[in-house]
Length: 299
Image 1 (cartoon, rainbow, N blue to C red):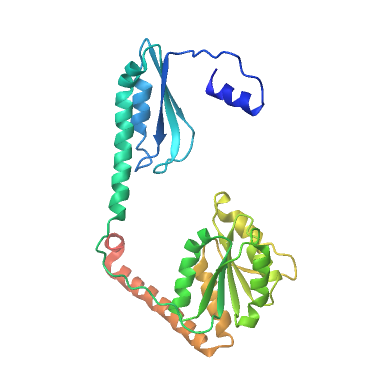
Image 2 (cartoon, rainbow, N blue to C red):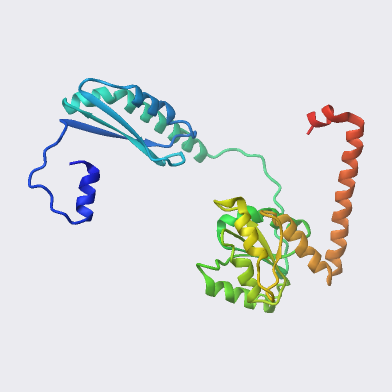
């Protein structure tokens, strides 16, 4: 009886045969685990495909999964009309390749755990003071997208608060955070969400503060699902929306909103825009001086 049939029999609570006889004398399974590189397992699979013998069969099975270090992405089954010792001896080239992949993976992991002397990085400190901008996301995975916007808030020395408020997993918390935001001194809310992207609209429905939605590119549809969801709020639930993954513009818009009643942020925005203008003018002059090839070479 095959492993697959045995599993189905157990799941369906069907009776097993009174006696089970093995169809082969011996068998071995070698797991295929993702290596250090996405293609690390190719040599192992090709070796398995190239092996054949009158008494021994080799079957590589790949699951169609993306290869990641240590992730099981397939297995190799060896069966033979021979002793287990003979089969193990025959399988040694495959075992050696699998061991080599594991060693390479473990060595890289150990290297990453060793303390390294790194050059000190200049990290902008978090602005002090009562938060004016709430930056919230549906999942911590959205933080990578929001990081650019957070850096803008730091650049403008604008106090902010970070939170995770999933519209689907923590709806009560999300509603309470949105309702309490104004009483805590928050003036603008930036929200990021992917997929169904319900968070920006739901936050907007629970507050009277300006809400800016950042569509996050999730697994499918290149972020268009998120973008179309956030811009499609019904009348009465206004939600400003920026481009997919563009938290930079979300933060700049938040600064402009603050600048409409806080002169210090208006002045900083004017200075920021003048800086962008100077940068472009400088590049234009350099392009005139160097011409196309030389300019591209120094980019």
